[in-house]
Length: 347
Image (cartoon, rainbow, N blue to C red; front, side):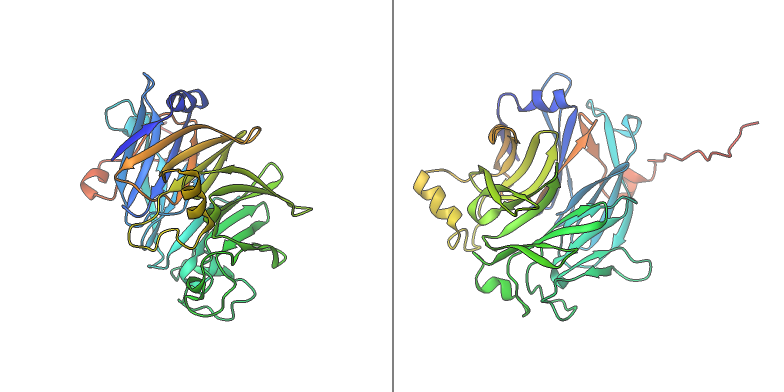
């Protein structure tokens, strides 16, 4: 894996006391990006097949993989390997959801996950007796079936639960979204079942922040905001690639950007390709930090080799240089950290 970064990117991470969890699903990597004490960028990676949605929890984060939803817990610096790491994330819990193509994951107020099950066109939660529990489907979907009809992909929540979703086409037939990818995407309000925006170019990553809705119109390469009352849309920033994965930290938006996948047909039917070609811009894969007050890209880290596609990015506040354990039992069997009960006494 080769990467380069803007001059002030590590200083920004360190000043914010912030690190980032990033999913690179194409190569099956969970990347933890932080900074060292002496101001260098630190990237720690673990292999998880098809890791995609990431969501912060009370003491760690959720991440979806090929057939599981994992919950990582922060075990602190005492359990970290040598190298200056100040936090060790341990895969403490897992739930078998099956190969259902989970995309976005969100954490509710009771620290439980809601997630988009793209293959089944629904929002779901965990179940004690089944792989998952269906919570909602778009009103144009007439059946719970493993057919990926509309390519539901993005989810934003508020204090009442699921609020916004994105999808690529309002289709009710198997793989219907693939027949024309561009210009059929939608942003929908889950609580009212109302389509807020349509005719979008491959939208992803809806989010709520400071009273506004944000989303990535990936097929145009842009970050957009929408006033929830007037539904007026504003273009904030454009990227040198396919944006997917959006998070916020104060006045900053943090966006993942991908290069086109080799042999996939690329961006040929998307406005993004024409724009990049007309402007003579080379495609990039990386993380871009945007100042929402100006719309400027202030910091970035780009992968030149080893990673072409990202799915999600999740800020880890209060963590400078994180590492994580994988699922190897030989590594995990001696990682033990008990909780001391309130009634426990040594007397």
